Length: 91
Image (cartoon, rainbow, N blue to C red):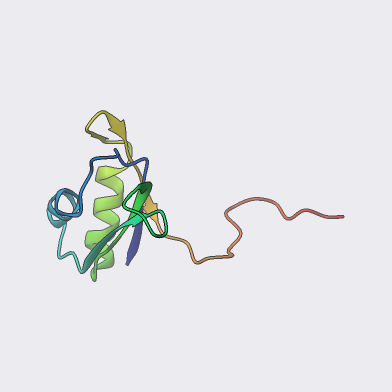
């Protein structure tokens, strides 16, 4: 299960996220996204967990939790190009 973690503090690191999510099950990978060609962070990450039960528990528990003064946005990752719940535009 791939999980989106948004509104990350600038100084958040992968080990902190791994530790937070591993309280709910095994963590396969953690990837904090950087601006291409630099070390600047974009403020979001993806966490992969093999268990859907553990992944959903992590989403439920960590969404809107505070990390270093920032309220995290944690939800299931969406495939690129999917309609994010918005109504289609009719021209």
